[in-house]
Each structure stands twice: as structure tokens, then as C-alpha cells.
Image (cartoon, rainbow, N blue to C red; front, side, top):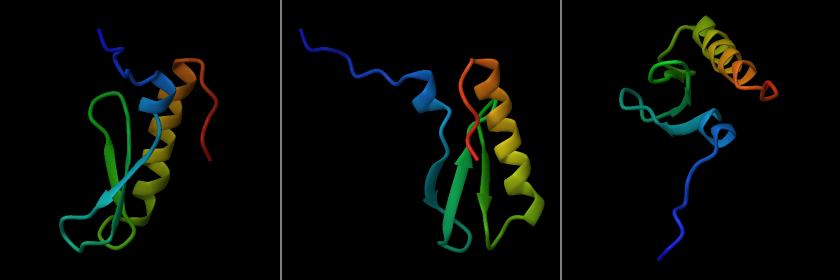
Length: 69
């Protein structure tokens, strides 16, 4: 029987990069309590990146992990 490759909570609470569907730029998705917050430096308001990072770090602290700057 093959061993399951399971994601740790630390891996799950890391930002992921994707391609923005609006401008084809780089979209960074920060996980939060529900689904995640996507931030594109071209399409999103400037404050959204800091807010998304704050929400992700709140979840990391809640699970006993170190914050990501």
C-alpha cells in the first residue's frame, strides 16, 4: 500500500503564486480562515496585500506557527 502524501498545516498556511485571470500578472493567494485572499500588484488595491498577509499570519499564530513577513 502506497504512503499518502499529506500536506502539513505549515505547508497549507503558506502563500501560493498563480497567474491573474484579469491581467495575466502574478497573483499571490494568502490562505485565511475560509478560502484565501488573492492579491495582484496590478489589479488589486495596494492595501489588500498587507491585509491578506495579516489574515494569513493570524491563522498561523492560531496554530502555533511562526509568522511570515
